[in-house]
Length: 435
Image (cartoon, rainbow, N blue to C red; front, side):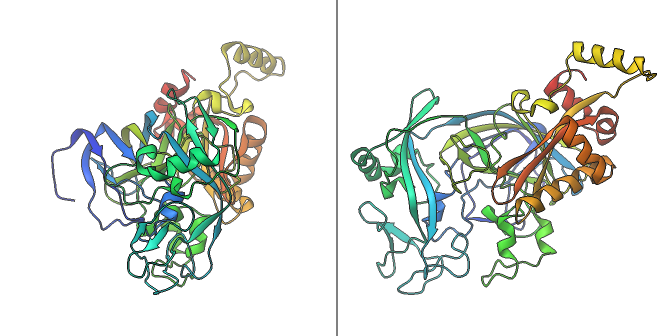
């Protein structure tokens, strides 16, 4: 981008049309140590029923971070996440045959006039409400197999799934109830007025499903990960990639519920300025997102960015909120350290390792491949063997599912000496206290 003075705070309210393209303009620059404040649009279902959006999501326009060069990393502190939607709708999906070219998330096509990426309008409510502007045909590429409409309390603590009448009321003013940002082009999913589950209560814990940096080649945003990205290999549409080109991803689409307020995500820089983007805010989600989708909402996010020079990583590293860490990966207390040191000395060992928690994101076409990917990334970054990482994750951590079919976190207590070498020890100390 052109040389401009870096800003302390960059405000974001514009979105990409489903494609993360490093050749497109970025906002900013934001200074190293500065802030990004974004009003994000719902992900998943809204873009999925908006055929003109080409990537399955609607993420924010990327922001250029001053001083971030290819081969660096950017540490992103999630300062706050605030849900603004009053209600949303979600559920398990079913693609509609004849309404897409190879991939319903990426290349929707009108079943009647054949227009690729057709513009649509909303006529009434219900699953047949999304109509092709050109010919008037029902053009949604997806419908629900089982779905629900859910409303949230004013304090963002709980949601309750609603009966048909309430769902229909919300459907008639979808953008208002979902608080869809002004520059968002998606059709609100509450238009479908789905009400298969009634009276279920769910606790809210908002997080970002899309969060990261721009890949080094154009990617449909929902496919910027090793699982969904695998669908691009040899695809029949214009965004097809080879297996080798898939390595240019940055794994920004994680759906890891630990990427929430208070966490720190360390992201690879694969294009000048990094290109920090976000979207697909979720009001809540259990590990695995097993239904394929959860409660996508609008919201306001505040971030702080820090450039880490010469930290070359293939995919994200996460420093979760301490209460989100697996039991075995939680920092040792002073009492535990004292007990361990006494034990060690009794066996002739004069000192114990100083360690701190760290999570490596792994992605792949299935969970086994994702685990292998996470283990290999951790081993390369920390200059260890994969078997050593496996041992450490077994006795001082855990592997947890972010999203089925293929996103995991490999979490364990890593030696502080290695974290010092990477230049992230101070960041870890700030997150978890002195180590």
